[in-house]
Image (tube, rainbow, N blue to C red; front, side):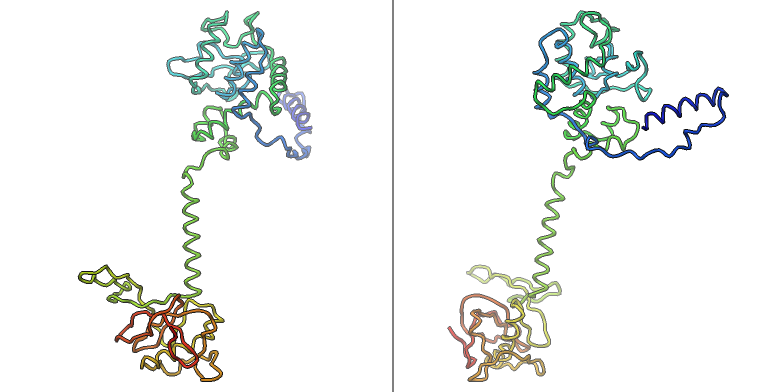
Length: 383
């Protein structure tokens, strides 16, 4: 429908220019919207499919011409009319370029579609194939056609060329593509090789850069996957931060306290260096971290009990209600199956989850070293 309307619009526009008509009624017609087709997906041949097509070319006079023709179309992206109008003077062996100066359309030689010339890189394989074709051809003059008919030296019939190409596809058993879609083979392969889209636009003679952007999906990742790895690292750090905010951190500092945190202690003489431990956070009351909320409610009174055992009463008014031992009235958390690290000092006690058992906490003034204990119903350390 669009083609018919365009044709009628052109006729009436020509009549207006010749003063044969005063108005163009086709210009007032509301044109139907074009429906998207599944064939709008970019179709092309993979390298192995192209090789299969080249092997399926018949071994006759036209077949000897079609093999370099198909390869040139797939490795330069030239349009069918530009291939048929290509001359030997346009093949620059020294610079390894194929220059486009003409196009054969509507049974006549004309300028290319963009009305300007261009050149396309010529790969070594294509140069070798064209060299062998030049040696076989009877038409080797500078103005002779590269893909001239082997019997007449004239331009090949475009319709017969397309029919023979479809027959080669069927013999090769590959997907059904048109001859023009060999151009897409060039575009996708160049994008996959990392060629800039601006260069592909120039090679394929696209007037609009948006036309070349259909090949952007085939280009490799310019970062080499670095953004994927960086996103994975950021995700791991975010997960760790959420865990820290959920459970908190507790540890005693065995070195000097600095504005930036806990500084590792100095190396003892004759011994191995001590393991640095981060400073325990300051708190106004018993702080219990690294334990689920339900366990914290049951174990919180242990901070008060630990301070009493060490001779350091905890801060007043900060005693939380927890699970109390029914017999002795002491905090009972032996049934939780966990051990806790107690940092006992002149201030409130701080608990954090740990594993194993050790000696009861010993107050050393300031922040105490971290010990691993278990507490029974009587408030005594259990080994």
